[in-house]
Image: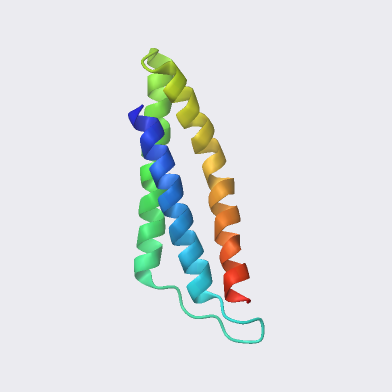
Length: 98
């Protein structure tokens, strides 16, 4: 269960950071983009690392038979996390281009 919780929280956190980074660094279509803040890069990398840790914990829980259902759910969320993060981050473009 711990792996599933970590993966879900990391997905939500990293999606929010990606949305913020895209929305704040992408300017209008005819303008220049702003530089990416170092804090944003650190938060995004930290979220990805924490997500991978949760993914590995879910795999271990499934392999050992401890919380197999939660482990499988953590694996599924972990696999779907990166497309979810990409779609939410791309949503930042809609905000930036309004």
